[in-house]
Amino acid sequence: MSQALPDDAPPIHDLIGIGFGPSNVAMAIALSEHNASVGREDAVTAHFFERQPRFGWHRGMLIDDATMQVSFLKDLVTLRNPSSEYTFLRYLQSRGRLIDFVNHKNLFPLRVEFHDYFEWAAAKVDDMVSYGHEVVSVEPVVRDGVIEYLDVTARSGTETVVHRARNLVVGTGLRPLMPEGVERGDRVWHNSELLARVDGLEGTDPARFVVVGAGQSAAENVAYLHRRFPDAEICAVFSRYGYSPADDSGFANRIFDPAAVDEYYTAPDDIKRKLMDYHGNTNYSVVDIDLIDDLYRQAYREKVLGTERLRFVNVSRLTGVEEHPDGVRATVANLVTGEDAVLDADVVVFATGYRQADGLGLLGDIADRCHRDDLGRVRVERDYRVATVPALRCGIYLQGGTEHTHGITSSLLSNTAIRVGEILESILERGLEGSSDPVRPIAGGIGTSR
Image 1 (cartoon, rainbow, N blue to C red):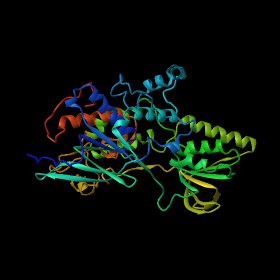
Image 2: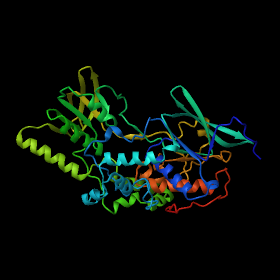
Image 3: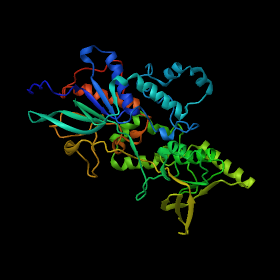
Image 4: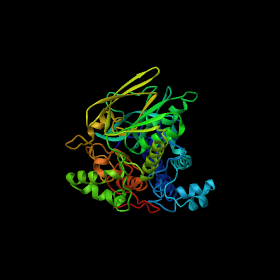
């Protein structure tokens, strides 16, 4: 039997979440709904740590007219529990806009509106989260030769707190990705910081922006900067002939279905690669066709009028960036001729995507107890639990960083509501005390695709 814990032991939670973005907000909602439907003795205790001082999701990209690329029905809860009080429709009702939204006849809300929905939902479960707390370490608690708990240390300013977990749910999100050798600066931006950086240009008169990238964010940045700075030239640099439209047709969107996660997970590696090749154009380096048409229409109109401010430097690659106090010198190589051209600009914006944060990066020596495949990727069970050595009884669950095992929905909103239900079901079935025996069912019907 395990030894009794000392009186000064940290508080113990069935689950500790690292990060409180949309995925872990959805996790907190699932926990709240579960706890409301069971007796007190069957409630799951949980706490989340978030390094931001308040909830925020890609704030730098909340362009006023940018819309979501996912249906409002794929919110934090609807696909798991359509009758939930946390749905986007309940949010609209609380804001007095439900009828107006219905009359709008649109599945895709404004991004700023969906962010407000996330904030609204996060506020309903904020008793579970400590904002302004950055997790700095996770240490094993070994008893009788097994790791029975994980001690999570979080820092807020100069103060640290330690909480003890039976399970971790890691939802640390994405990190801006810059090309190798390029550092962000006052005039070299990543699009994730666009709005804040643009506000810093108030009172100036920029003459030229260069936007690098061919995806949705790049096109949105081009359109926004063109509108915001009516006297500036906007140069879009990308290696294609033009923006490629996203495939959002009904059949292709089945790659985001919950059942597709099952199929992808069980598929051989060569089929996984084919599926990603086949359907990468639903999400990666693609642009909504309406936005493509708007940009082309604007560029053509300017050409007719002889007032060209939109420039598309296609079949080209940016090969050098030199920042100086008064601007940036960008070197662009034509991929066909190999010839270099120089663009002197006030700002270069890199809309070059994101990388998944290392979900195991905070685990220290514990990460050595997590199994990896032949390519060094973490092995993840179907229930999003990291495969570990038997002596590690605690569950480590990943929300993100599982694209190689679970497919394209790994870091997207499409399957979030279902995923958190599956994680919660796994925790309950495996037993909160580390036992492999089921301890209790999930009340309230948390559906899964299994």
